Image (cartoon, rainbow, N blue to C red; front, top):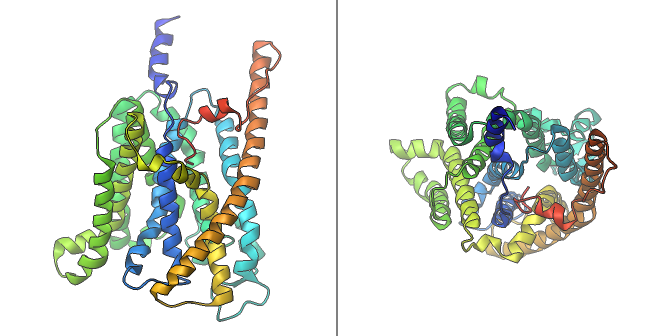
Length: 409
């Protein structure tokens, strides 16, 4: 082995060394999905005094983006080619999206929409056709952005993130901790700069398509995973970070409106989104580090992990269930009796999510991953001049162990 080869192997070791499963991230993912659910529930039924808190549930999307970057980086192997990576992400995301889109269409579209149901739109096959290949999220026009299944615009961003990921990993391959730190700082700076830019130059920043505007959240997650993989492990108590997130939201909802003329509070309110995104990133880092060290984690209990495994399907169908109830029963106003509506809507959405997860998402992913694994095995065997060996599929224990990030997507 040449010195150059040895040096190259050392530089690539960040993506080849074994890494433990991080099941707490799967449990943590559930709470982000549940936050988005609470945010949208205000359309059907509100709870007096706490709706302001629920309104920040939409930040679960930013949490998803940061977590996605972290999980993708943590799970990456240099032996995975770019085409294989793309096929695996397609198998993970697209089948569930397509079926959820079919379920959503009769809820959000009609040949003769009722004017009183402003969420129901007339069929526009030109716009709807963008939802099939997940292109609708490139538009800032709400009619296009939220077309098809309104929740699916985030998948446009995810597919863009996936598209650039192999190039990002090539660029980061030999940089290790220093490069990861630079990526983290640049990503954090972009996250803070974007809302300021929208305030100072809205005509310019409003032109930026959502996937580009949100890519820094994904790259921040990638950077944090690379820092951990490079041995940068600063202990931060997850409880402390979670408490900080809760305190920031409570302060924004209940304190900031009382003192709008205080300069620091006004700045705090304008930067609430990047503050929360950075705290989310710190929470993901701290929880992952707790798992690595084998410490106790409430996010790792069996129920939360199972809920986290269906969280993607839950995210895809929850708005469809919610708006179905809205169409049938109407807006329920603001009352604590609405807790019943929250419970019923949650149970129905979770049941539908379980069906989508069990009979579409996982089986389709298993088939697509299995096909790609056999393709890669045959290609490798052909290169080596040997007969291809059977390749494990995603359901096999070996394949499951190969995903060190657990069920987090």
